[in-house]
Image (cartoon, rainbow, N blue to C red; front, side, top):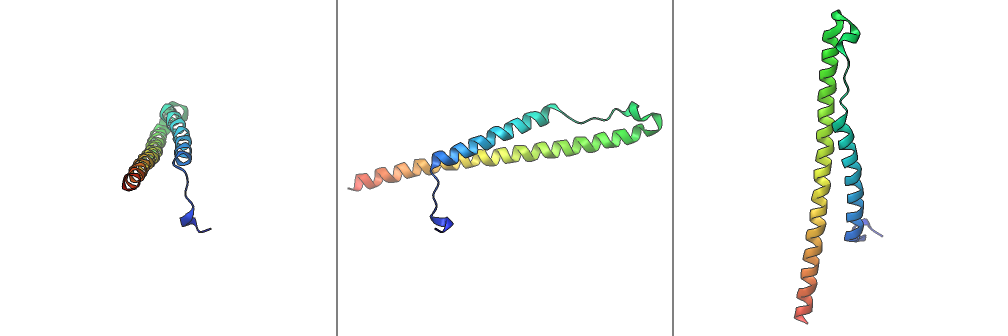
Length: 101
């Protein structure tokens, strides 16, 4: 059967997307609460600038990952809106066909 003829039921899509959103929400919460940090005093006076550079790198990487997770979450919410719109249009089309009969 060609892929183009496979139709998923809206509730199946919604369940799958909601599971993915729940996992993303967990990852975002985990990411928001823990930021890696290297104590600059642990390296000693002469190497503190290295610790600051490492921490700045961690912060940039952390922020980028958080933005990526948030972007994925927005995309999944858009899928849910599209599924709702599809269902609404499908019901409206069915009512129109019934009205024509």
